[in-house]
Length: 416
Image (tube, rainbow, N blue to C red):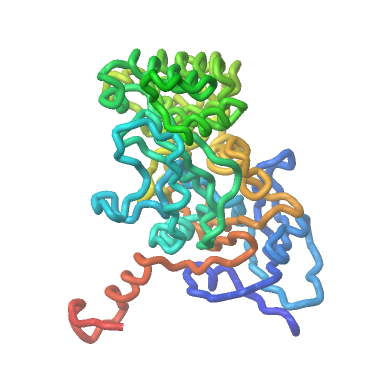
């Protein structure tokens, strides 16, 4: 094959590469497009200059240097969503100087934005992406206020300017925010209503204000359809959230939603998506007495857009297992994949760059050893923005250093 370089999938499974391939051909995959075309069997995908150029059977190779990956019928999906996380803004949660996801000031600062703290060189990025995840939503956590602050979607390509979509505001409701609102759930809504009213009509000089000028500007901007993630679990709190969001024109997303199944019809009618953890199946507090494992299935059947989340920044790989659990409790398999791909991309305004396999879209793809929702499957090839990602991380380097196949010395003495 003069002029071409062919890489078999068996060789790709564990290789360490620094490949700069302008053109890549994936041959004979089971392509989960995550759009109206559904799943295309024994299909080729041609990638060039970062974009998907062709999708079809028996595609011809262009007359230039091409990396050919023989998929042999294995599943090809869009890159997966790593949930609402602190990837790149938190290295070790217990080490204060490495955790930048929350503001500890005891005042309302919705203008706090975690994006400026993002570090694309964090060890969590390669750990996450070699497991098949190409994007995440940076979340702002509340340490001193029911307003967490602002976050944004980011592509896990290791770039400094990898943000996509628009800013997202985070608000915390329920037991976790009780200590931040005078110890009462009613106090949370009182403060939230007052804050939104301040954004619309600034207080006079004789009144005590909740917000800074910048905070009022932030809330005012979101009152015109801005995306707001409400961390809330109890059914009654979810209904109050819907009323609050409707009152101020907020584009609400429920995060947590342990009891969301109880109000599935109301969520569907309001067209409010839910980011949930399908493993929340037992009451762990008074906000989750209605926890059940078929939460995602009930919501999906009711017409609610479901997104899988909750694995945490250091365990994003478990998102696949969570989706698989949801499928085992009644969520259709295709809906399980959508909850990790097209749904979060669409909800958080990143559909043009993530979540589906379409012509002339950014090439963010993963080739799997088997069903991506099976815990025994693994990502064999990861492509982000058209580039083959090195399948190595800090963990794989430590593994390779300390677990050689035929050591001549005890492990403690082995050096690379």
